[in-house]
Length: 267
Length: 267
Image (tube, rainbow over all chains, first blue to last red; front, side, top):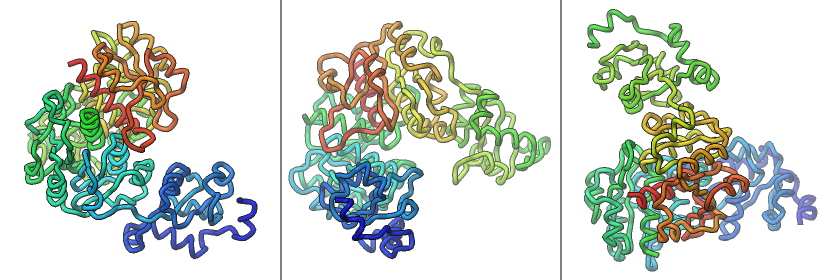
């Protein structure tokens, strides 16, 4: 395919208007105005292609040689230098796609019969948000809600940390946490707040069968945790037991422990 | 205390020799040559003081006003600008300590009667290493081994991600993974390799009582995983069940799930 395509489409440089336009998607405002974002690297591009969300795919010739299966469709060929201007990584892998955003209205994200949902209240670090997305996906969560004033999930760091899970798990964003919890409770889910100061021990709750029911987990911000007024909206405030001297877990590892405890209990 | 101290010790600037010497500790080679490293921020400095490892403490007057309990001992007073040259964070919190390194020989780190140990093979990202340290501490691990060609645990990002756990959990480093596993098996621990391609399911192993025994968990590198020759040294290769469409978990969340599964089984 490639050998046929290339003569038809000249190599784009960093000054080619379509490359210039794509580069603007490194900025949040441009992503929000266009409803598109950048995905880079073979794994993420493969996932985006699989769900039919790629609007434009840029590739270098070297990357096409490594991943011929990814450039079988319409591809814009780029110089290495032009491609480097579209990525934020030190060692770009030669593939960048412009994708349509994937978030959906809350009612749609938690439609169907959800049994496990993660609600992140005001998550601000893109790496954390992406890691929790990946972990929620692995644990079989039905949706992830980025509630309140959250990081843009289409930030490059979040996209990379999600390792493709952005394309697997329904996501809603921008909704107040209280509204999200109301909606989830309306769909029959219990709400558990992960809270280091909680009065329910995760292990004891597990032993008592308290994780078998459909559950929405509420997680606080990575720096300041969960405000009391939000934690109070939960049915229970659940503490992950600390067996050593650490004060707490970080957001992503706490989410991993809680979501996997639920996934196991719901099997 | 402060009011008495300050007249005795003039404000150091970024050109004061002791500040210049401290700044060199931002480099790995200097840390290795001196056996010291930098710790910043009130939480980490508090932990370092608690275990008696602080050799020199630098503080700004503003930080002393916020944390008078931390500057009750000998303190070198710094200008804000001088302090900024000692930190790698965008919003330094006015406190930096020079601390003695904490790693110890393998035999000492796994001495006593260890029941839960994390072995990281060739971990390269300082944030990951620090997060796993924090998580291992929370799960009550008796030691963490940074095996093979690992990241420097005294890298500022690792120190910050560990959130003080660097001072709680015995650490050994620089030992080949195979030697670490031999030593741990010699102390009666089973060796479980966390391996996405493993033939044992973590949940099934838990149900079968296979996590009750003293256990060393072996984790691979964040990018390329666990080489077969290392995974083959384990008693079992254990797969964390993936309930959704994610291909895998990242290092820190995988470690969280495995270490907490063991901690719970060993209760």
